[in-house]
Length: 123
Length: 123
DNA sequence: CGGAATCCGATCTGATACTG
DNA sequence: CAGTATCAGATCGGATTCCG
Image 1 (cartoon, rainbow over the protein chains, first blue to last red):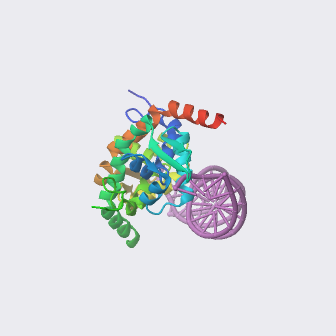
Image 2 (image 1 turned 180 degrees about the vertical axis):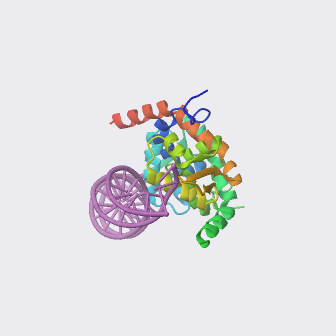
Image 3 (image 1 turned 90 degrees about the vertical axis):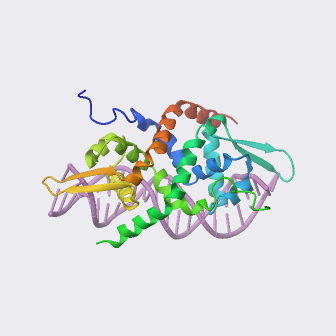
Protein backbone atom coordinates (compact mmCIF):
# COMPACT_ATOMS: atom_id res chain seq x y z
CA UNK A 1 0.00 0.00 0.00
CA UNK A 2 1.77 3.09 1.17
CA UNK A 3 5.02 2.20 -0.51
CA UNK A 4 7.33 4.65 -2.30
CA UNK A 5 4.96 5.51 -5.14
CA UNK A 6 7.37 4.52 -7.89
CA UNK A 7 8.70 1.13 -8.92
CA UNK A 8 5.84 -1.01 -7.75
CA UNK A 9 4.98 -2.66 -10.98
CA UNK A 10 7.91 -1.66 -13.19
CA UNK A 11 11.52 -2.46 -12.39
CA UNK A 12 12.41 -3.09 -8.78
CA UNK A 13 16.09 -2.49 -8.29
CA UNK A 14 16.41 -2.10 -12.01
CA UNK A 15 19.16 0.38 -12.24
CA UNK A 16 21.89 -2.02 -11.28
CA UNK A 17 21.26 -3.52 -14.68
CA UNK A 18 22.02 -0.23 -16.31
CA UNK A 19 25.48 -1.30 -17.38
CA UNK A 20 23.85 -4.10 -19.31
CA UNK A 21 21.21 -1.94 -20.92
CA UNK A 22 23.89 0.46 -22.03
CA UNK A 23 25.58 -2.34 -23.93
CA UNK A 24 22.40 -3.25 -25.76
CA UNK A 25 21.37 0.32 -26.36
CA UNK A 26 24.80 1.19 -27.61
CA UNK A 27 24.88 3.07 -30.85
CA UNK A 28 25.43 -0.02 -33.00
CA UNK A 29 24.78 -3.07 -30.87
CA UNK A 30 21.16 -3.49 -31.87
CA UNK A 31 22.06 -3.55 -35.54
CA UNK A 32 24.77 -6.11 -34.98
CA UNK A 33 22.45 -8.32 -32.96
CA UNK A 34 19.73 -7.92 -35.51
CA UNK A 35 22.03 -8.84 -38.37
CA UNK A 36 23.38 -11.88 -36.59
CA UNK A 37 19.84 -13.02 -35.99
CA UNK A 38 19.68 -14.12 -39.58
CA UNK A 39 22.85 -16.12 -39.70
CA UNK A 40 26.51 -16.25 -38.82
CA UNK A 41 28.43 -13.44 -40.48
CA UNK A 42 32.01 -12.51 -41.09
CA UNK A 43 33.48 -9.17 -40.10
CA UNK A 44 33.28 -7.69 -43.55
CA UNK A 45 29.78 -8.97 -44.12
CA UNK A 46 28.66 -7.27 -40.94
CA UNK A 47 30.39 -4.08 -41.97
CA UNK A 48 28.66 -4.09 -45.32
CA UNK A 49 25.32 -4.89 -43.74
CA UNK A 50 25.38 -2.02 -41.29
CA UNK A 51 25.34 1.18 -43.19
CA UNK A 52 27.63 3.88 -41.89
CA UNK A 53 29.54 1.91 -39.28
CA UNK A 54 33.27 2.39 -39.27
CA UNK A 55 35.68 -0.47 -38.95
CA UNK A 56 36.73 0.79 -35.59
CA UNK A 57 33.21 0.97 -34.19
CA UNK A 58 32.32 -2.44 -35.50
CA UNK A 59 35.37 -3.86 -33.77
CA UNK A 60 34.61 -2.06 -30.53
CA UNK A 61 30.97 -3.11 -30.64
CA UNK A 62 31.78 -6.73 -31.35
CA UNK A 63 34.34 -6.86 -28.55
CA UNK A 64 31.81 -5.51 -26.13
CA UNK A 65 29.14 -7.94 -27.17
CA UNK A 66 31.60 -10.79 -27.01
CA UNK A 67 32.76 -9.81 -23.56
CA UNK A 68 29.17 -9.76 -22.37
CA UNK A 69 28.54 -13.21 -23.78
CA UNK A 70 26.02 -12.06 -26.35
CA UNK A 71 28.11 -12.75 -29.42
CA UNK A 72 30.61 -15.51 -30.07
CA UNK A 73 33.73 -15.11 -32.16
CA UNK A 74 35.26 -17.99 -34.07
CA UNK A 75 38.63 -17.68 -35.74
CA UNK A 76 39.57 -20.12 -38.47
CA UNK A 77 43.34 -20.46 -38.81
CA UNK A 78 43.50 -19.94 -42.53
CA UNK A 79 45.04 -17.38 -44.81
CA UNK A 80 43.51 -14.92 -45.33
CA UNK A 81 41.93 -14.90 -41.88
CA UNK A 82 38.34 -15.97 -41.53
CA UNK A 83 36.46 -14.84 -38.45
CA UNK A 84 32.83 -15.61 -37.92
CA UNK A 85 30.46 -13.95 -35.53
CA UNK A 86 27.27 -15.50 -34.23
CA UNK A 87 24.79 -14.98 -31.44
CA UNK A 88 25.29 -17.07 -28.34
CA UNK A 89 22.25 -18.83 -26.84
CA UNK A 90 21.90 -15.87 -24.49
CA UNK A 91 22.22 -13.50 -27.40
CA UNK A 92 19.41 -15.23 -29.22
CA UNK A 93 17.06 -14.53 -26.33
CA UNK A 94 17.53 -10.87 -27.14
CA UNK A 95 16.59 -11.18 -30.74
CA UNK A 96 12.87 -10.75 -30.52
CA UNK A 97 12.91 -7.55 -28.46
CA UNK A 98 15.79 -6.03 -30.36
CA UNK A 99 14.22 -6.85 -33.68
CA UNK A 100 11.01 -5.28 -32.51
CA UNK A 101 12.82 -2.06 -31.69
CA UNK A 102 14.72 -1.99 -34.96
CA UNK A 103 11.47 -2.46 -36.84
CA UNK A 104 9.77 0.13 -34.68
CA UNK A 105 12.43 2.65 -35.58
CA UNK A 106 11.92 1.98 -39.27
CA UNK A 107 8.17 2.10 -39.03
CA UNK A 108 8.08 5.39 -37.16
CA UNK A 109 10.91 7.14 -38.91
CA UNK A 110 8.61 9.45 -40.83
CA UNK A 111 6.41 10.26 -37.89
CA UNK A 112 9.41 11.06 -35.76
CA UNK A 113 11.04 13.23 -38.38
CA UNK A 114 7.80 15.14 -38.62
CA UNK A 115 7.68 15.53 -34.88
CA UNK A 116 11.22 16.85 -34.84
CA UNK A 117 10.50 19.40 -37.51
CA UNK A 118 7.40 20.54 -35.67
CA UNK A 119 9.33 20.83 -32.43
CA UNK A 120 12.14 22.79 -34.02
CA UNK A 121 9.87 25.08 -35.98
CA UNK A 122 7.49 26.24 -33.28
CA UNK A 123 8.18 29.28 -31.09
CA UNK B 1 17.86 -12.53 -57.52
CA UNK B 2 21.57 -12.10 -57.10
CA UNK B 3 21.10 -9.19 -54.77
CA UNK B 4 23.71 -7.96 -52.28
CA UNK B 5 23.76 -10.98 -49.94
CA UNK B 6 22.87 -9.06 -46.83
CA UNK B 7 19.67 -7.26 -45.89
CA UNK B 8 17.26 -9.52 -47.65
CA UNK B 9 15.22 -10.64 -44.73
CA UNK B 10 16.36 -8.31 -41.96
CA UNK B 11 16.20 -4.57 -42.23
CA UNK B 12 16.01 -3.18 -45.75
CA UNK B 13 17.20 0.39 -45.76
CA UNK B 14 17.23 0.22 -42.01
CA UNK B 15 20.12 2.40 -41.20
CA UNK B 16 18.33 5.60 -42.05
CA UNK B 17 16.39 4.80 -38.93
CA UNK B 18 19.56 4.86 -36.92
CA UNK B 19 18.93 8.34 -35.64
CA UNK B 20 15.74 7.02 -34.16
CA UNK B 21 17.26 3.93 -32.61
CA UNK B 22 19.92 6.08 -31.02
CA UNK B 23 17.24 8.02 -29.23
CA UNK B 24 15.67 4.89 -27.82
CA UNK B 25 18.94 3.23 -26.99
CA UNK B 26 20.21 6.34 -25.33
CA UNK B 27 21.71 5.83 -21.93
CA UNK B 28 18.53 6.72 -20.04
CA UNK B 29 15.67 6.77 -22.51
CA UNK B 30 14.59 3.21 -21.90
CA UNK B 31 14.29 3.81 -18.20
CA UNK B 32 12.26 6.95 -18.72
CA UNK B 33 9.93 5.20 -21.14
CA UNK B 34 9.62 2.24 -18.84
CA UNK B 35 8.78 4.43 -15.87
CA UNK B 36 6.21 6.41 -17.78
CA UNK B 37 4.60 3.17 -18.82
CA UNK B 38 3.08 2.90 -15.39
CA UNK B 39 1.63 6.36 -15.17
CA UNK B 40 2.17 10.05 -15.70
CA UNK B 41 5.04 11.34 -13.60
CA UNK B 42 6.45 14.66 -12.55
CA UNK B 43 10.05 15.63 -13.11
CA UNK B 44 11.11 14.95 -9.56
CA UNK B 45 9.26 11.66 -9.45
CA UNK B 46 11.10 10.51 -12.54
CA UNK B 47 14.38 11.61 -11.07
CA UNK B 48 13.74 9.65 -7.90
CA UNK B 49 12.61 6.62 -9.85
CA UNK B 50 15.70 6.38 -12.01
CA UNK B 51 18.66 5.63 -9.85
CA UNK B 52 21.78 7.57 -10.67
CA UNK B 53 20.41 9.98 -13.24
CA UNK B 54 21.46 13.59 -12.87
CA UNK B 55 19.09 16.48 -13.25
CA UNK B 56 20.85 17.51 -16.40
CA UNK B 57 20.61 14.13 -18.06
CA UNK B 58 16.98 13.73 -17.14
CA UNK B 59 16.25 17.10 -18.71
CA UNK B 60 18.25 16.30 -21.82
CA UNK B 61 16.64 12.89 -22.16
CA UNK B 62 13.13 14.23 -21.72
CA UNK B 63 13.69 16.99 -24.26
CA UNK B 64 14.88 14.48 -26.78
CA UNK B 65 11.97 12.16 -26.22
CA UNK B 66 9.59 15.09 -26.38
CA UNK B 67 11.09 16.32 -29.61
CA UNK B 68 10.68 12.90 -31.14
CA UNK B 69 7.05 12.73 -30.11
CA UNK B 70 7.52 9.86 -27.70
CA UNK B 71 6.85 11.78 -24.52
CA UNK B 72 4.45 14.66 -23.88
CA UNK B 73 5.11 17.49 -21.49
CA UNK B 74 2.32 19.30 -19.73
CA UNK B 75 2.97 22.44 -17.72
CA UNK B 76 0.44 23.54 -15.12
CA UNK B 77 0.65 27.29 -14.49
CA UNK B 78 0.78 27.07 -10.73
CA UNK B 79 3.30 28.01 -8.09
CA UNK B 80 5.43 26.07 -7.52
CA UNK B 81 5.54 24.79 -11.09
CA UNK B 82 3.98 21.44 -11.86
CA UNK B 83 5.15 19.63 -14.99
CA UNK B 84 3.86 16.22 -15.92
CA UNK B 85 5.39 13.81 -18.37
CA UNK B 86 3.52 11.03 -20.09
CA UNK B 87 3.92 8.73 -23.05
CA UNK B 88 2.27 9.81 -26.26
CA UNK B 89 0.24 7.24 -28.20
CA UNK B 90 3.32 6.59 -30.29
CA UNK B 91 5.40 6.27 -27.16
CA UNK B 92 3.07 3.65 -25.78
CA UNK B 93 3.69 1.46 -28.79
CA UNK B 94 7.29 1.24 -27.63
CA UNK B 95 6.45 0.09 -24.16
CA UNK B 96 6.32 -3.63 -24.71
CA UNK B 97 9.68 -3.95 -26.47
CA UNK B 98 11.43 -1.53 -24.17
CA UNK B 99 10.03 -3.24 -21.11
CA UNK B 100 11.21 -6.56 -22.47
CA UNK B 101 14.75 -5.22 -22.82
CA UNK B 102 14.77 -3.66 -19.37
CA UNK B 103 13.62 -6.94 -17.90
CA UNK B 104 16.12 -8.86 -19.99
CA UNK B 105 18.92 -6.73 -18.60
CA UNK B 106 17.81 -7.47 -15.07
CA UNK B 107 17.37 -11.14 -15.69
CA UNK B 108 20.77 -11.61 -17.28
CA UNK B 109 22.78 -9.27 -15.11
CA UNK B 110 24.50 -12.08 -13.25
CA UNK B 111 25.25 -14.12 -16.34
CA UNK B 112 26.72 -11.11 -18.07
CA UNK B 113 28.85 -10.09 -15.14
CA UNK B 114 30.20 -13.63 -15.07
CA UNK B 115 30.93 -13.49 -18.77
CA UNK B 116 32.78 -10.22 -18.33
CA UNK B 117 34.91 -11.59 -15.54
CA UNK B 118 35.73 -14.67 -17.59
CA UNK B 119 36.62 -12.53 -20.59
CA UNK B 120 38.84 -10.22 -18.57
CA UNK B 121 40.55 -13.01 -16.66
CA UNK B 122 41.61 -15.27 -19.49
CA UNK B 123 44.91 -14.82 -21.34
C1' DC C 1 9.63 22.75 -8.45
C1' DG C 2 11.59 22.44 -12.76
C1' DG C 3 14.40 23.84 -15.12
C1' DA C 4 18.46 26.79 -18.25
C1' DA C 5 23.35 28.16 -18.71
C1' DT C 6 28.08 27.59 -18.19
C1' DC C 7 32.39 25.34 -17.35
C1' DC C 8 35.44 21.64 -18.07
C1' DG C 9 37.38 17.01 -17.67
C1' DA C 10 36.22 12.38 -19.46
C1' DT C 11 34.82 9.69 -23.09
C1' DC C 12 33.83 8.65 -27.75
C1' DT C 13 34.78 8.18 -32.49
C1' DG C 14 36.48 8.83 -37.28
C1' DA C 15 40.61 9.00 -40.01
C1' DT C 16 44.78 7.21 -40.89
C1' DA C 17 48.58 4.10 -40.89
C1' DC C 18 50.34 -0.37 -40.11
C1' DT C 19 50.17 -5.73 -39.71
C1' DG C 20 49.94 -11.08 -39.64
C1' DC D 1 40.66 -10.38 -44.36
C1' DA D 2 40.44 -8.78 -39.89
C1' DG D 3 42.06 -6.50 -37.27
C1' DT D 4 45.50 -3.06 -33.76
C1' DA D 5 47.51 1.52 -32.60
C1' DT D 6 47.49 6.27 -32.42
C1' DC D 7 45.89 10.87 -32.41
C1' DA D 8 42.95 14.87 -32.66
C1' DG D 9 38.28 16.80 -32.87
C1' DA D 10 33.66 16.21 -31.28
C1' DT D 11 30.52 15.02 -27.95
C1' DC D 12 29.07 13.76 -23.41
C1' DG D 13 27.94 14.51 -18.79
C1' DG D 14 28.60 15.93 -13.88
C1' DA D 15 28.98 19.93 -10.90
C1' DT D 16 27.70 24.31 -10.05
C1' DT D 17 25.12 28.52 -10.28
C1' DC D 18 21.12 31.09 -11.16
C1' DC D 19 16.10 31.81 -12.12
C1' DG D 20 10.66 32.35 -12.38
